Length: 243
Image (tube, rainbow, N blue to C red; front, top):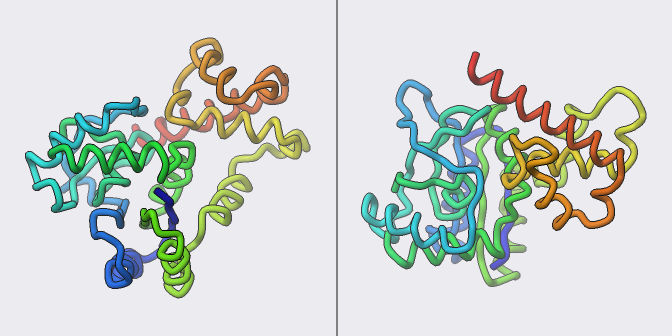
């Protein structure tokens, strides 16, 4: 499963893009939207930060019970540091780690596919950043690379920001004022702290995951300092929302 992502300043453009992608040949359930919701109206649903293999089927069982396995109806979720978010589509729900919110094996398998191959979890912080700014995220999944390329063209025509651009814009906003940020290990450390399997954890708590995922760079003191900054950045997200 391949994916492409677009970030839109206007929800109307995101919804228009979704409709164009479906017209191109995408299954509607494989075009997901993440949109900031009205906090007064959005239901708060318990979420988890991580997904292990096998969780998708469990989530799918709940999804179908509420909306029908192929409905892909919008549901409300609550993301710490972001606020209420409306998620439509299996990829969006997989990224949010929704549980107890919305069936069936078909949905479960789709979520598993999104998690395992289509949608990297380590990009979740970029979606969160976009949502905090009031933007809407469109995620398109397909096994057809030609279709994915066509989706990217549609997103460009609709003035979507791609993930590479979003990542650089995000980094400019969080990097330190001194020159340390120019060291690749520092940036890797910051991003590592925002991965769903590490966020909110102390260095000691996250150490087994970090050592396995990042190899030799994990031993670099600059990486460790980057991790500390990323963790502090995540905590500021949460504090900002609590206020």
